[in-house]
Amino acid sequence: MAAKRLKTGSDFTWQDMEVGNVVTEPGSGALRRTGDWRSQRPILDKEKCNKCGLCWLYCPDAAIKPLEDGYYEIDLFHCKGCGICAKSCPKDAITMIEEEEK
Amino acid sequence: MSKRVGLEASHAAAEAARMADVDFIAAYPITPQTHIPERLAEMVADGELDAAYVPVESEHSALSACLGAAAVGARTFTATAGPGLEYMHNVVYVASAMRLPVVMTIANRALSAPLSIWGDHSDAMSVRDTGWIQVFCQNSQEAFDMTLWAFRVGEDSKILLPVMVHFDGFHLTHVTEPVILPEQEEVDRFLPPFHYPFALDPDKPMTLGAFAPPDIYSEAKMAQEVATRKSRAVVLQGFQEFGDIFGRYYHPVEPYKTEGASTLLLTMGSFGETAKTVIDTKKDKGESVGLINLRLWRPFPFQELRQAVKGAKTLVVFDRCISFGGPGGPVASEIKSALYDEKERPRAVSFIGGLGGRDMSAEDFEYVIDRGQEIAEKGSEELFETVGIRGEVTGIRG
Image 1: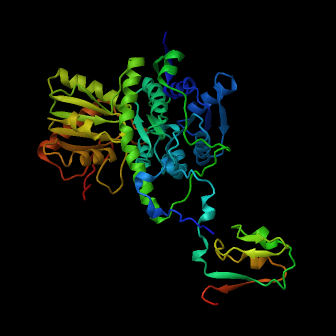
Image 2: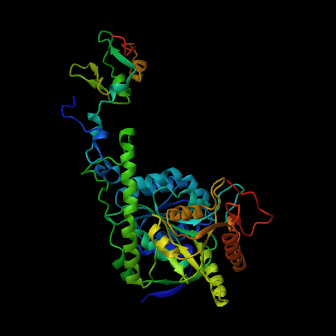
Image 3: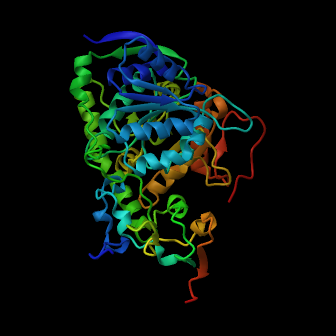
């Protein structure tokens, strides 16, 4: 994801700021790596998953993607590790592990 | 033909908003501002004004709703006072930082506790640093004029900043005075339609009010500070254009009989009119005195102030607010700071009075000037002195 290099805050001088700090390029937040300060990571066990989609429904960051075969994958570029998917899964198919664990 | 009518400042401000043809009003009633939204609600209900009037549940909501309206490019007006202004405080900062040019009347009121519905400048001073353009009025005519002027300046595409028009609670809001109302055609000539360049539009999506991490917040604030200072040019242009059309010329700093005067009194707001009579009396007696009305509070008119006090020995500054534990009256400390780097400057003396609706008589201002001169000559250990407060006040030191 994010093939082109994104401008970060430190690329801007005060003169570069748009009036009222308006962001004229909508949806640019999706290009930002918001998953880099995650302390816990969700691990999905496909064997236990029954495709109910509750994790996808409850994820507050739209970081769970539906796949064509009806299963789901976790988008670690955006996932902040909140653990709501793990709590919402009725089959305990998602477990949270510490980021430093492999 | 313009017409001369009797209006209290509240109704004068409402009339100005009507003639400016505002699109959106959201307000919560609070004494002594109540007559303003009341009159506007009446105008909308009677079909005299084609605007959306939103009776919100709080001042925080009032200004929030106004920001939303301004963001779609609506000409937006609200009014509040004292504790109401405090209740919307965090949104006050948002308006200027998002460059949404709302016009807001502040019917200046004291702050609790003890509970007071009457006037002073404590509310104004609490929003000093919020990034709004701010002016003070001396009478009902000015309440009308400055409200109209506020739309012209705030909405200018070079500025896009919200504007606060301050006038004293009760002393102006509830006092009927003669006001000259212009023709609609003149108002339309002065005030072009509002065009907001970033108006919300489904066909042109953008993000307003995004967050800023530490790597960009400072740049955002610097851009805002520069924009605020740059607004000075349009502030002056607005005064000039207003005078050219309506015949009344306003200035950031307005001297009254100051030529050659060795002692100057500086006031802000309606009490300046009482002070004028004192200057007249003293002049008649041959005293070397003059008066300065500080109209523009933000952006602070440094150049004009320095020019206005040039050659004076004593500058007595009258405040209607206490900065608790601070350097004196808030206006006085701004004035002192503005003059500190000048090689030659008058001795500035800080007086505080007129709190919570306490009247200031001509005799009180006479005392302020006389005692101010005495302090300038003999010195004083007090950081400020008070007027009209019972009981000896001493020990106000650093």
